[in-house]
Image 1 (cartoon, rainbow, N blue to C red):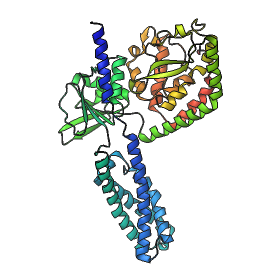
Image 2: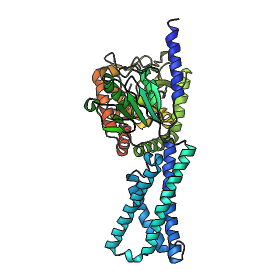
Image 3: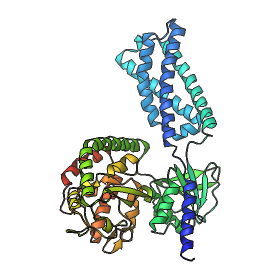
Length: 467
């Protein structure tokens, strides 16, 4: 009975965590931003076309439309940088209208300044341009009000997912935020238990803002976990230096102050670029390599009749578990699902075809499916099995920063791999070298770097440590 109780408790916790999962609002917001861009472009052109009709008696007179088309790119450039199309603009129509008008006034001023120096001002009707701007102002403000009403009605006013974690700190009555108790989910910020971190990762999934209220002695541990999870996280109250705070957020209506301790490694634009890169490369690779994948699958099946794929639980983004695919390279009765034993040269568990696909890294190719599913990225820190060790120590026992490498999606290849840090981890340095490269990659991500790593990977597909 005593052995059964913990399993039942884990099952209950797992079910309760699954019940707490929230849908991502990022795609909804992205569609709203695109809609706002299209609306603004339409309103610009409509306003100047109508102004030409009212002033000149001609709908969409050519000079009026040229003025609109000249101003529109400048407006969009300024608007994209001043948060006209941001989360706050979706939640407050007055903020959205103010930002849009600032971008409009600045773009009109810049175009007028340019026209003055190029002596092209006289080519345009001042009356039409002035009337067009006035109409644009009215329609922009009206559109922001209508969009706000739509959000309030169709989205119930919810544009962000916010979560407050109560771990015994001062009260934080944050309106519109979900609340959970750390004790209810057995969340211990000082623990290195991967199952607890997976549970936390699932609770933080799709959250746009996480606020933790906890005693002073637990703040540093919570700050570290929020950084590892790759979320925008805040800790209620004081010691900024030890927590590595990156900003202070004052909630006047609550009379509370929080320290911003994590913002996530990539912004929205960077995440979109990285995901597009993943989809293009993975989709192209799956099509190009499909004959090879089919041949390898057939050879594995013919050798011993066992399953083609080896599915293993690995640690992914936010320290959450996911099922990673590989071609099976070991005998079915010798499979190591927890990764307790690293593969060695002349390993007796490896099949004949397995030795070849491991040596050439072909066994990793099914992870293209993981990339398309969204569990992995083309480039990122390589995912490790739970039982992985170095010098007979779990990786997280060697360096606590190990958890921080999971703030990004794991990759099919990575900076550590192209630097030659591959194969078995016999010594602690084997792990710390990889960790240093992973954290360096996270701190300095760029699309150009991802492309460079992919190109360099081609040169290290076969490696002395690949066995």
